[in-house]
Amino acid sequence: MKWQFGPYRVDGLIARGGMGEILRAYDTRHDRVVALKLLAENLAADEEFRERFKREAHAAGRLREPHVIPIHAYGEIDGRLYLDMRLVEGSDVGSLLAAHGPMRPADAVAVLEQVAEALDAAHQEGLVHRDVKPSNILVSHSGFAYLVDFGIAASLRASATLTSTGYTVGTLAYMAPERFDDGPVDHRVDVYSMACVLYQCLTGAKPFAGDTAASLINAHLNHAPPAPTGARNDIPREFDQIVTRGMAKNPADRFGSAGELARAARQALTSVTAIPPQFAALPAAPKRKGGARWVYALAGVGMVAAVAGVAAFATTMNNEPGQAIPVGDPSPLVPETSAVQTSAPPTSSAPPPPPPSSAPVPPPVQNPATQAPETQEPAEDPETPPATPAQTKWCQSISYEGAERGTGCFEAIGDHLFAHDTSKDGMWVKTLSETDYGRKDECKDDNTAEGPPVDCNLDLSEKGKVRFKVELWDGKTKVSETAWSKFVPIGQ
Image (tube, rainbow, N blue to C red; front, top):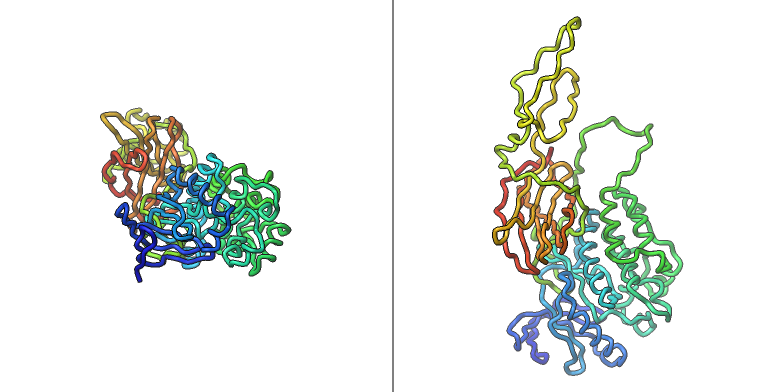
């Protein structure tokens, strides 16, 4: 049933919670469809909350970080506080976890990195979110994540009045211990909540179980942070240390910023745990793990899930910051049909081994112009010449206004997608990949100054093929792009 709220024509309900409800509405003043959040009536009666809401909504509205949902307007109409926000089609992380279970570590880190960018931008402006939780992290169908509800976080103190609403029982699962005291709080309460969200993304469960405010408060104050590997043994143990540090009782013992936590999580994806020699298996070709995957919008599948939070506008996934790769000139893209042309031409037959009594045969002289650029693996048989390796890395360059502006590469060994912004004019470079079985990924280098390429490590099916292209963006506007490359093999 449609009804009018000030200049907004309300078309339907998106979600409802203890803080209020989220509505799909048409803004008659600006001729656009928006997500309209109406706060509970009792909150407008709290003078302190009302003033802080307006102050922080104004501050959040000035944030230009792409992972902060844009706020069009805010205020009070007929005794109800409201936020007018951009409408996004997608779902929140809480709903995705409930529908599909725990995430793969790489997917969890990709979400975490995007949330960290939003939080770091807010913290630099002196704005603390105070309500970071899965239901406040939205993921569009293209995989772009947004942090919402700046300006309407819960009160700085978990008072009995607020805990009676039912809203804060859900939020209490992610609250830092200092939130339950009368002392000041700073950006490190968001770092604590971020660690809680990471734990839930990896395990599918909240850090502390409890159905009452008292039990959750006691857990945050007195219980040790849980280890993700205690609930799931197929993830790197480094995540245990990250959650433990992120959820430290003393704020001084936590990561110094949200970005620092996200970078540690990214590093954990590439960690290797030493195996005692007596248990080490013989060297063998690496095998990819099979089984079900946590499939959702981050993988570009285009799944449509029920919206349990404010929906968001479609844009693109960001795997930044990623890891820097060694600086070097990328090789130009070679079509799939001629990939081996960059390596030494194969010999027609192997020379016969010399008789035992003959003098050693000197190695054949190779023409430097045809020397293979990549180091060859030693053959199993020392008397058999090593096989010529196929090309494993492909690159494309992107130009703008007659000048080369950046590069993008895909490297099959390890499934690496690279993006390199080679200028410092404020624009940024993005590399997009697409497999022949439908998976889509992206890697972004938004450095404003020259620096090394960004390395986004993927986990692709070795039996598939992948193609990629490079785009140049100026803010939120794409200004140039290359054509898609030919499909190249993933498994090497």
